[in-house]
Length: 114
Image (tube, rainbow, N blue to C red; front, side, top):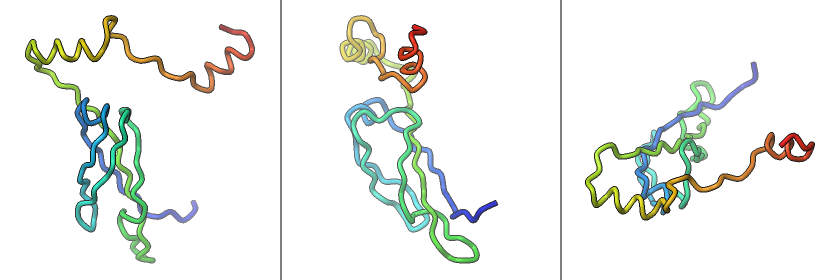
């Protein structure tokens, strides 16, 4: 097994507005809080790297990276006004925006399996 730097993982909970519009949020690190820019359109599971902000390696003292993983928290209890606003934002169908095709979808299309 090869040498690896220490890596730290932090799950950052975002609400729908923060994920959609972007935000600047303090994230805890070993050295204290760091301000992280969350870009507009952040998706669930999207990962951000904070280089050199992870745990120091025991033998070398070299710092690893800290990874911040976006966790989108969907509200459970909405009042009627909030529900109406979300329906407005979501459009008439309520279906999610079309996501770009992944590798396998493009491959299927290229060899005419669709």
